[in-house]
Length: 119
Image (cartoon, rainbow, N blue to C red; front, top):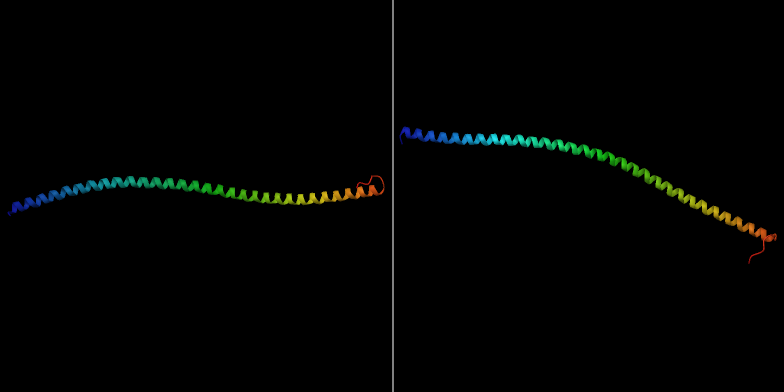
């Protein structure tokens, strides 16, 4: 092979490598462009995630308030239940006392002859 042929082969190889390098540069440029788009998407996702975190924090705060209100309501219900039991007990005692007083009064009136004796 002559020097000119060898130079021609080398020149063709260099041209081929140059074309491949240009193709590689184009691909790298496209990759960089895609990466910019991906970076924008990631930034958008971060922003969205922060919004979701803020909303979750607000929901958590409202849930805390609901839990406190539920606890207070439960305590009030328990107090009301206790008050009702005490009222029932006192009412039964009072009714029993009134019934005893009524029987005593009837017995006394029957003994004095004011009321006829019921048999």
